[in-house]
Image (tube, rainbow, N blue to C red; front, side):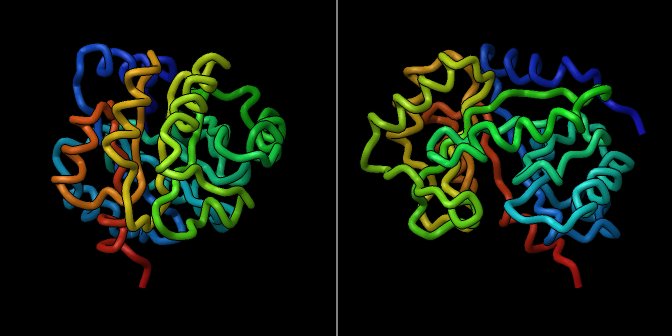
Length: 240
């Protein structure tokens, strides 16, 4: 089980962004994933997949590490944590999206969870990538909104979304992630993606409600450097 150079993962994302190479991450919710069929799952995902994200809003203690371990034995792609809270951290992954929920006002998800994470991150080589996380209204109440007790940003308020993303960059975030939430009826609009991309100078990730090739390509064309897809593939790999 080989781990990629921890510093290279962000650099690869950054270089791909600069060269306009599109990246695709498949997001796995450990609560919905059957590790026994990891090999079959990896055969089903699109061949252009570049990263595997692992995490969920609520995950049983230890489930994330089980899934990450199974994945690391089966793929050389970077396995990146997308955690809902500090309990989902594991040094067995290659990298961690250190998510700060900039769209909300709950200090627990702006900085509180991060302070708790320090003791778990100290002394291991897990790559920590600071990520400004913006929850966008996808037409349904998402698990993220429920767990964090925050309201998503309206897709009608494009300027507020743009300003929030830019504030994240000015605060030193390395990535901006626009998320419509798992099971979103409406993905983040092309207008929002383009407006944010035109404002920031760091890589832009877009996810939530993107289930088709058309939706994926539309997000790329609007300016997304990485598209994150999840539920569309998880349904083929659920626990029995």
